[in-house]
Image (tube, rainbow, N blue to C red):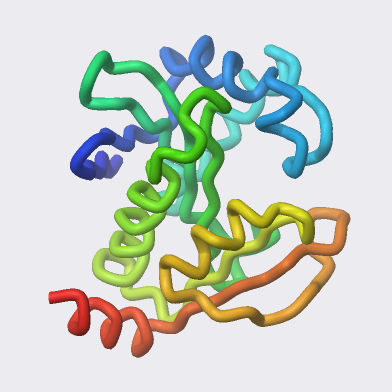
Length: 178
């Protein structure tokens, strides 16, 4: 399974040992405000870890836990998975952070690395992101990635703001950043 690193983070595939840190984040109603609208129980977090481990085994990618290099705390999570969890759909990128880490650029930093993994390692032709239509912070991360507005669509049982970037746009963006 693939471990990714950034300047401030280490992204590790979900593991049983991450339960307490993930539960701390997922039980915060503010973190989950735009992700189903309610805090997650410990049993739900445990079940999510099990599902994600199975996806890693089947697909070779899924959700990572974000650990800070300084201190080693689990501060977030993010994914490359299939939109709607259907393998016939394009790849989707997503993230969440503990509330005490909001506003520090960590979501953008992790998203940049996960997108690079999707395009460079998986040769994805397209990467899509969804967020609750009122989640302006996540939409800004999507825009920083170079993603463009696709519209409002139904995903995960609700209206979602959808952004996307294709491989050619990602490569142009990478060239411009050098």
